[in-house]
Length: 304
Image (cartoon, rainbow, N blue to C red):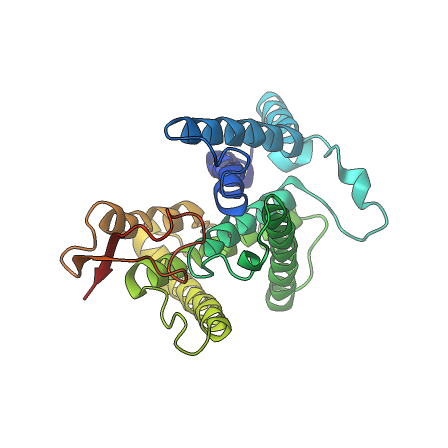
């Protein structure tokens, strides 16, 4: 079946769950926001599950299932026997070579950007759109465009560093499939920095230098930190924790997401103990995504 196909099948399903993020972050649970809990949560979960199934079925499942079955039956490489994408004709004449890995890369960047909106971006600048569902529609379109741009920039950087793609290569850094898959790896590196920035540094500097300036500082800082994390991972951590030396062998997406868990455990279950103490205060609109909180009702926040 091939290493790339096997690794792909192990953790592709996580990214189709971006539908839940779209409903909660983008649409703020519209059209169910008038419901009470637990009906609200159950309705959101049901719609998110339906959307997840549709996205997975339309964009991925026929290709993946057919490829895995053919590879298992023929004993061949996954990429050499997988069926054509049904939407491949949509890219005719554009110069884009769509593969399921391209879709996977775009969706993982959507996953990352969606949660940047809910954390370091604090809903900005989409909070300027007051009406639903237009805020969610504009946000989703913006995030899709950002994700496609991030995929193209990532591919351009790899072309510069590793040289042009070899059309005959089925795997490795010269193959189109691997480079799209490496876009997935790149999309995971900002996750730890922006979660750390929000949950442990309280979205510094907030509005101290103006909301727009704070937004830019957090965004640039996140990508600078993720660049250093990328270099450190492939230079030290991959060999130390996984015993893998080459960029091609080392596909760190699962590891990158697993090491986020201790950070979230300290935040969600430990209330930052022993680093912070609890106090009662109003929620800052810059610290929380607008309308994801209950408004001016006092809630627990953390201070030194």
